[in-house]
Image 1 (spheres, helix red, strand yellow):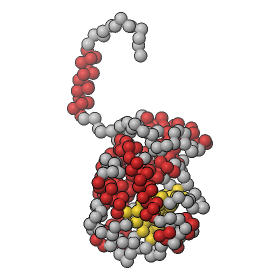
Image 2: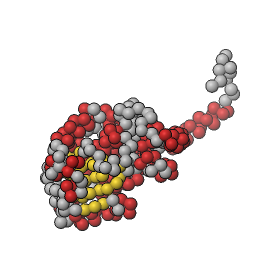
Image 3: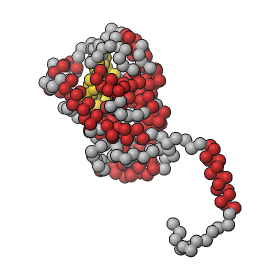
Image 4: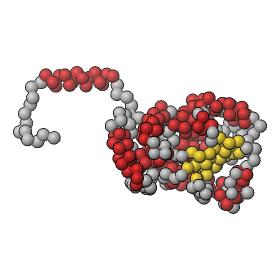
Length: 306
């Protein structure tokens, strides 16, 4: 698959924030990428983003690339038709807040805040939420590049037991696999705030798909984010000094729709190429054998050899 636009960063040409000590590793992995069968067209910026997310472990980087391409190909409910203006995506974006807060923590981490705006459990379809979430996060990566890491805040306010009945196991499994094995960022903490009384039941649904490393990042609290972060990093919704989540969300939603729509649609091609059909392979072998039996045909331009 080929893409028409620059990825993974829309507005940052190569090289972007490369570690100068890792340039040889970037070149080596890029050459490795080019010979992988069925891989999509990837860039050296992709290589550095993945290498950075894997803490410069080359073998882990290769594994992450494989899972990235595989999951984006095999899970269309999470990655197919990435148009933020589709009615299904608009439904998600108007029923939720998805916000990258502007100020980094003292460790250089970006805080990502997610919560429901519409508490009606019948409004949202889980697979569509996953797709919208992944699109939002790709835009965050495009804007941020390879930063130190991310801290995620999931606010359970408004979540009820009926929301749990809306969870679809297929998209949940693919989402958890992607976040843990293919998402090219450094995930530092995941805070579940305003945790509901049934949080154990909710956690039990996802538990079979959570690895030990991710488990160590999870923290549950019945309190809000103001118990975790300095107020100067938080929106007014949580007693902070920044503007509201609604305001941030509308700004970032508009950017996603207007500045990133074509880029997101284009990114749908970042997946494994379809397998070649056996019939096509058989025909190619027959054609090759037939050509092998034909006498060579000399042209007048006999010196024009490749």
